[in-house]
Amino acid sequence: MRFAIRTGVRETDPVTAAKSGFQQTDGIAAWSSDQIIKALATHPVNTPTGLALRLMFETAAALTDVVKLGPHNLKDGFIIYRRQKLGEKSAIDAVCPLSPELLSALAAIKTPTYLTFNGKPRSNAGLGGRIKAVAAAFCFKGSAHGIRKARAVMLYEAGWPLEAIAAVLGHADTKMTAHYIASASRVGIAKKAYALANLNDTSRLTEGKSDE
Image 1 (cartoon, rainbow, N blue to C red):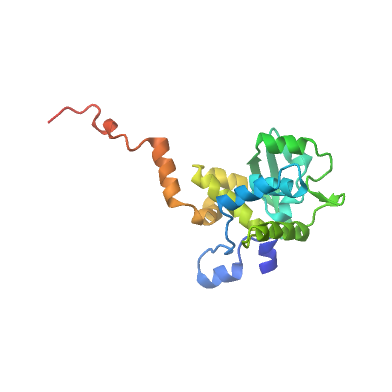
Image 2 (cartoon, rainbow, N blue to C red; image 1 turned 90 degrees about the vertical axis):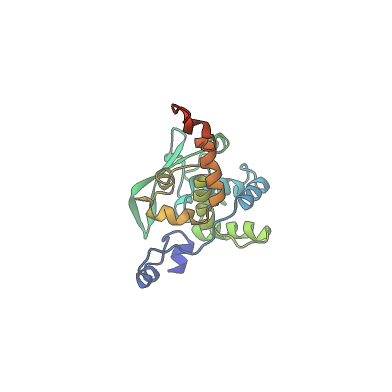
């Protein structure tokens, strides 16, 4: 079961969840925003590792899904795919907007899958090992699934609603999405909310009222 979680086939351990009576996360830590930024800056998108990192981050795809992504999944600037779980396709599409930089890099790729190694599609294990090596180079323990969770956290901190994040992650509802963003900065979220709503502007509270 732990192997299935590490490779992205499963997101939770149903045995653990059943024993506790609650839906539980897999315990894999999300990468921090600083760790993501450093990794992307060190590995440009025009390198194999950089392309893999950028594609994993922007799509938030699990290992088992990202290695299968290719030109057939690209539609109007979005990566759209159905997640692979336990060897079967889910009925929910993951819909992921991409940056112009990544779109430009993907446009130059003519192979059936975007991520290759020695001319063949990358394997789950091979890519997973490479991602762990990238994290180790920065002296922290990180996994591919941690990038998926980091994307969810960063989108939430940027003000995205749970429904939109669930669409990117390919979740059927927001229950699992809520677990993914559990490590989001509550301070950062509050600051974003105040900026969007301008709630500190108290002048609006007295509009239309006369002095008493």
